[in-house]
Length: 333
Image (cartoon, rainbow, N blue to C red; front, side, top):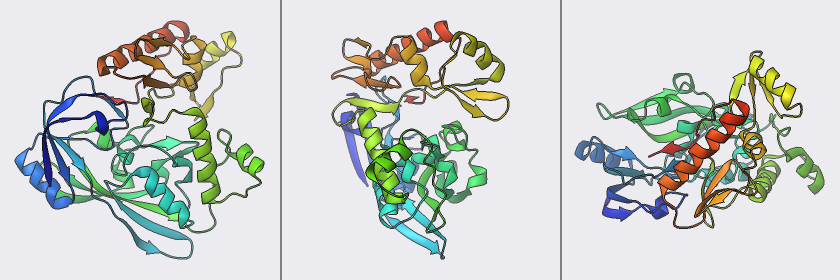
């Protein structure tokens, strides 16, 4: 266990916000997590920092899990269970899986963050969500510092939601087990440009090929946080009642949408933002990305408060024009 005092968090969050933490504890194993909880029961978990916006300096100690490790727990001819430690880089984990020919996470390639944080947000992209491959996770129950195993049915997964997000200070995830396929794969290539790019390359559908084209798509649309501070998608795609959508469609006949059951419709937040002429909008050091309006960016030296103010402005413009309230996907600290 390593303890850092009065440390800058600039390199611990992908927005590159320079706030200082009074105490940051690096936990290299479960014993470190338990000891940190014993010493600082009010600590807060900081994972990869790819889905947070620091608007102020943390008032409590932060726990940063660094434990690595990928293990195959079980396999037969068709399926494999793979367990990854919470500190594993999510993108590296996907690369490992596709290199083995395991399928299920290829659409989630190049998403920033850690394995341990992935279930919290139920990360998703191109028609796949983490819950689709989640089997179980090991976690420390904070109240009594006992290690427990939580199956998928107990996670209350929803759109960018889970029990871990709803009850933020209840569990600390230490590892996640995924159920992937070795053959008879059920690929999802109908979202975005995946199928078209596969055809352009002359590639058949394999975990490796799909992961590669997903990376190409993401790199062409989304800014690299190592070069331009951001947290990926800042807003959730709104899910609205069908009746409200039908009224909107009268004024905007070409509005893109996705069916969510019989009574709800999902509308792309990027379309709503761009329709408000906010694509590329900038004020001082913060702005709406010119390539993907769902992404808010830090051009350098911005404060979390300034980015949050921009987010509120974007929400207000969309609400005034469409009557839709966009929820933030990013967690505000």
